[in-house]
Image (cartoon, rainbow over all chains, first blue to last red; front, side, top):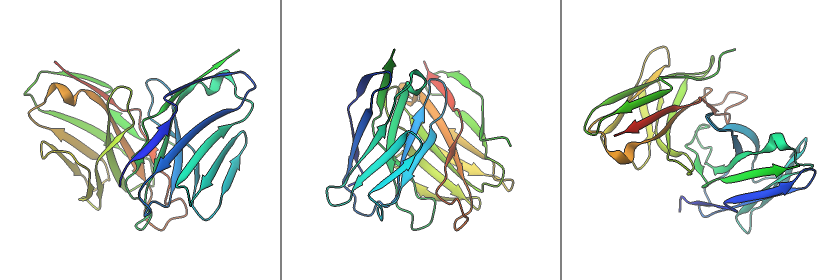
Length: 114
Length: 116
């Protein structure tokens, strides 16, 4: 019930292309879904997050699409750049207290090639 | 504005030893969470401290313990180290519940623990 499944494990995209990473969850009590970006030697940094009351959220080149009935959400990176090369994690939590623990996916290593 | 500060950055310990990792939260944050990130994996929740008490705990044995001080800083202690405890240990802080950015965790860069 606590799992968040993430795919693909690794992804290679050409510069300027669209990078798409998918996640699925099981626990219907989850109601906060963030995406984190992690560079080598650094901690995860919050990229964008969504609540289930909306189906899409866009911030610059980054978009989260959310399908509550399918219990799936995805990250789209438009016009992918070499600087986007990093590991991306989806996560989920409840927010009944405001700071519930995060359950992370297994990560996607994204490589943007020129 | 300093973010989350963790020390030390790297540590090598022998199996069976004990280790203490330290974390200073971001200014304005009063809740500290600890995560273990094994190589090639996502972070796994260890526990969370709020008002100097353990508020939530993940599926980790009692060898993992913690503390939060009145200034909101925190320590993670691991006793009887095993080879499998080798990982990146991340500290994350978050603001008080009900604040305008309640959902914002800020992670530190972590402590890389190697058990030999």
